[in-house]
Length: 613
Ligand code: ASP
Image 1 (tube, rainbow, N blue to C red):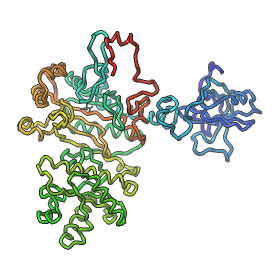
Image 2: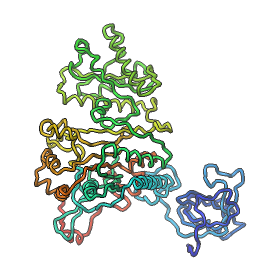
Image 3: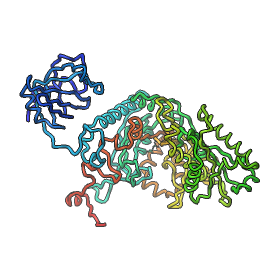
Image 4: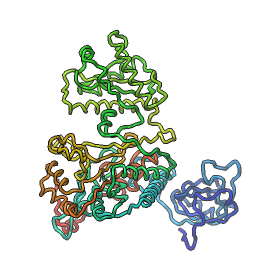
């Protein structure tokens, strides 16, 4: 093995071009590939910036050539030599440095490497567990380096934008008390206070609100959050949010700031987005899309309730009171009779015993009594399609109408489940035919990104497990002032709207936030409505309730998942592709082998005695 000595790199492995021909250079990097052609040995040197071909010619420099015989993939080497233009027939247009090569007169082997379990030079991805265990090798892959580069640049663009808007980046503690997001805390035992624990923050929520009480006016943080949840498909126990809070905002003030930094973030990869984003209330989202995070790349559902008169409902065996909903999946193409039949029975199966049924519009049309209705339905669905997409193309679209079967409970508050069920079906069918309708395909323009603000969420959510009302966002979210003034908190909690909002992109929730409660009396009222006694509230959030008493300004904010934004911008298929050291779905760090057992001594110091399960 050789020493680096006083060698310094003159160029990176991605830098040299035809115009550098003739220059003496020093390149340092990893051996990406080695090709032995007898008297010529080629080493492709790799670093973060790219790959450069280095040639060792036995005739020109036999010592360097002899060294290269020992070099193997992932060895770290220094190549000292001259840049030479490649012959016309060996120019590699796929490589940025493909017009040149470096003819080495000296090669130093700075370090060797074991045969790696997979080659960072290969595009084919090895088993993900192996990649995570040997993350340092995985991160050598150009794709991962690019993902982390984009991540860095996006974070920087967000910082610059927010800083220019007067936001201060302020760090909040990792070791603190339980925060109010409603997930399970990660706990850290205290050595100096036996039996006491810190909690890792599920978000900086309380601290950012306290910063507003402190007069900091505008705060942000690219903040790590910790939530000990059973991990669903694409979640991480520690994740990063772009978290911000501001004093005296209207909702629109928050929206404008977010639209601004998202524009800056998307520009990092050259993506254009259209702002301001549309706004939609929760109620409208459910009624038109059946979901609180509508995917606007597909046409909305159409309410056909009024087209079904009592007589028609009786004749068609449809529940009298409940809504009838239709939707279109565009450009599915002509379906054969058999395919149509199979599809109908699949839809029926997916509706299960929900007391909903699919109406066969083609069949209606063949019947004199219902032909007019069939036309009306088709017209309404194609109107919606035209609003969505000028091209229309009604004849090749798939129209689906879902009706409630008779005897289904018709109470007003139960109706939303129908919208939700049909909304889900709309998404499932769009997915099923996605190769045909191209709604999810990237078009290379601002239409690829359908952003949306969803506002006016219900304040309370019914918790089916505990049979109590719980908060839909978090307990510091302000209810609508109108609902407070009208006394709905007591008289009709279900109707109370929150000043809470979500930002949605292509059917994905990117973040949520709210205008907060700034009055102590209102906060008390909310805790009581949530069934939290004064003592319990004091125990959990006492310090915050104290702070609220000392001149708290109206304030509000939001947090957006940075990891997810990076995933969209890189086109990655999983959060693990955009986090340097992620955990598995079982919350394990396979490289560091964490969590792990600790010594008896450590446990003793922490006053912990494990119980065997
Ligand atoms: N703390 C909230 C969350 O993490 C966001 C907010 O209300 O600002 O979802």
